[in-house]
Image (cartoon, rainbow, N blue to C red; front, side):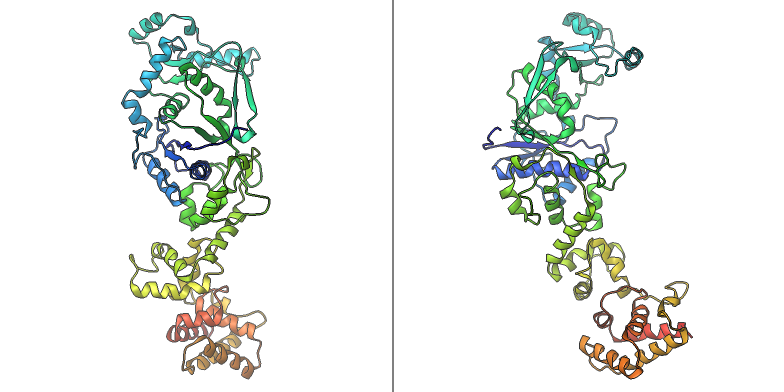
Length: 501
């Protein structure tokens, strides 16, 4: 295997055709870790040459998603750098790609292809009818002299520019993730791929390669799906006489059931959805680092600095990773519980604001109240977006009836409504006599009531919980009542027993 030595330069080059897939963040993360571990640069480049699938706000979403995950870049569209611009449409407008496509045409290593999409479809159909499973296009124009191609273009015939792939021989390249073994592809298995579209816009195969060379990228770390295309890229490097970068194709991420790749169509994997749902970036950073890489066979919980220090390409596995949303939730819960009460409260405020439970921006009193409520749910939180539902009854009055909860929830099993109403009246009377509204005092009053009424605590406390919160599952009872305060607690108990008659 090749020994990695600095300085290294890597890039993440997403296409703005939609919201960033979480698998793309994993690819960016591995590049970022590689650059930070080996003391190099991480470059962000936007590859927007796919005009048909371009989405206006996708580039902004890509950058916001990467920053949310804790990634920064040394060069990019918004921070600049010595090799700009870092958006391919802007580079195309400057004529960068035309210079190099002309060079290939003049060297006889590429050609103008005038075959239309309709003609290409007919060729594929004819090949299929002859039992040819893999149609490999070789344009007739590849044999034409450049002057003949230019004459045809001068007549106004639309054309693409295709690579004149060798008809014989083989191409070899190495892949760091696969142990440095050489991958060998016979040229008979290749075809003449498009480099420049009829619109004049370069395709990925051409534009990314020119950019990687001009931006002095040393290591191309990208998804495994690009392995079949790499022979074309190697041929282009050779055609220009440029040194090859080191290739490292990262393992695919499978769905939880292992049946196919993690997919936007089938899975909820847009990165912005994870911050909307309240995943901590620290937890996502940790989890994504383990999607195809490991430090050892047992260490999973690692800080950002520890992962940077420990990350090496040798530990990236060629075998597929598998997405496990349950494991991600557990890891996020661990990270939530490692935060202080104040830190959790601060991160909950945007979700409570969005739900309309606190103002925007929150007042000083609202912030203080959220801090006081946070310990009631801190241990239960998995996704921060759960907080509005867990805490809503502290901000809005839950009333039994058509507009609120079902009064039947107040009645414990094996008890009647009238009996439950008497228990709630007794609880109201007992709590109204508590002078200091603290946890110990509220608990003492209710436990004394249990003893005096000679009832089991479960049914009584359950009825009080529903009356106070409108739900059967809520934070610990005594802490919850104290957080609600005396007046609201008593008012809700009264509404409860009144609803039962």
